[in-house]
Amino acid sequence: MLSLTEHRAVCNLLSLMMSGAESHTDREEDYKFLHSMLMEKKVHLLFKIHERLKRFERQTPVPLQQHAASLASDLVEELIYKDWRDEPKELIALFSKPHFKSLLHVHDAVAQRDYEPALPPTPDDVLEEEEDSVKIVSMVKTKEPLGATIKKDKSTGALVVARIMRGGAADKTGLIHKGDELKEVNGVSLEHRKPKEILPLLAQAESEIKFKIIPGDCKEDISSNETKLFVRALFDYDPTEDPTIPCRDVAVAFKRGDILQIVSMEDETWWQACHHGNSSNQAGLIPSKQLHERRVVLQRPSALFKPRPVKPPDEGEVMEEVNYGAITGIHIAGLRRSFRLGRESNRTKEAARCLRRIAEVHDTIPPPTYIEVFPYHRKPKDQHCLVALVGPSGVGVSELKRRLVISDPDRYGVSVPYTTREKRSHENEGVDYHFVTVHMFEEQILNHRFVEYGCYRGHYYGTCLDSVHTVMAEGKVCLLDLHPSKIKLVYTSEFKPFVVFVKPPCIEELRLTRRRAKFVCDEENAHQVRTFSEEDFEDMIDLAEIMESQYGHLFDKVIVNGDIALAFRELKADLEKIQEAEVQWVPPEWICTTSTKQRRLNCDRVFSLVFKSEG
Image (cartoon, rainbow, N blue to C red; front, side, top):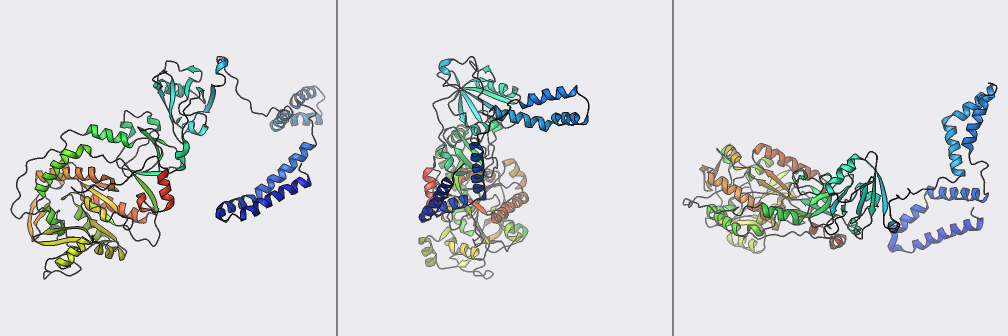
């Protein structure tokens, strides 16, 4: 028991700790935590319990009997043969109660000090010189996977632990480590066995799995647990279709766009990761960036992009996005894409040149894998993020944008383009176009104020940042239709764009869904339209593949526009989720804080965004 002097000494020590902590104003959070912990009622109760135990210990009590349970049993046998009076019967009934028997057994265990933990006996076949190097690990078998992979050491032929999955059963024990050699499983020797032969041994175990292990020299670096690295997956992965996965039971399946937390990148082939928000926090295997890039390169045909002979375009013919408005009779101001007509005027020739150029360098372009992201917590006063829709001409980007505006004009808006041509009688300034002089337009070009611009029939057309700011200032979601090479001007922390890539379906579905669709051939004559040709379909698919290979790291969402109604519903649902979500996953560069910079320095890998020039 603590004496009065000792008790006062403890109190004085705590007081000194509290007063000393107050002087460290730079550690205010630590002081608050220490103060709240010491003021907890549970801490004071622990002092009281400690005092009572010390007082009892000072009395040095000695048990009168160490075998009370057997003595009670003998007494019951004696009483059975005595007169059956009420007192013996009551005593027999009392001694026969399960709770009383348990109490006597506990009494005997305490009296005999039989409550100390006991280690299992060392197996007889363990050699004396191995006693310090061999350990026995016993685990309760559950439905949860072991959380470890095993490989055969090429030099020794021994079975060793290749990796431990963070958060798995093996990791939770803290007794099995990477590099440990497995000697036995449930008493069965693993000598001359293959890794795949261990699974049946584990399956045969009923309630307990016992390993005999020789600890290895390899110790896992747990420092990566201190840093949280999040990535967005840029491809789909199904481990059931991957024959090279070391263990399917511990693999993680994911879809493009899923947010993954990378736990370990020690293995260059298989990383450890878990889905963000996964309550179990158990990691699994995913293919590394290097592995997926090698796979895609090997799967690419040698002649993936072969330039095809093309016919020269007709004089004055201009390829333009499908004009669904001309077909339906519905017109929305600001939906015109005339500023892109200059670039599209020789679209067929340009597509052929692009295909030839890509055919030469495509094999050197790394395929999309993962991109590092960081959670940005939106504030109630934050403006809506910009939505950039990209895709090859003819895929239906303009129609999706038109339907979004019609469905909710109070939420969605489009920027009004600028032009240097004269205003026509049926047009309104600031509604159809902003009509400016050539000098003003070129001055804005030099000041990098145009997201995208072009020249058509001697006149400039373009989308200015001022128009984008106007839409966002109205509290609306600004919808931009861009070529992916032009996203970089709005791919900033100011706009925090959500980039949607509209992808064409397979050519068979294009033939069915676009066989009657028409597009405008000349912006000056809206009635001059023609239907799609087989060559248009092939160009659309080829250009989509080029866009995805070059700019796939920028796409937050990929929508296949086979059925326009289904694609629209999917797009609208995703945009509503984004606007209502409290967290948006953005590149780390957009969150410019000291802690973020330090966190990135501690990462094993640095994922960087690289904007590739259009040429």
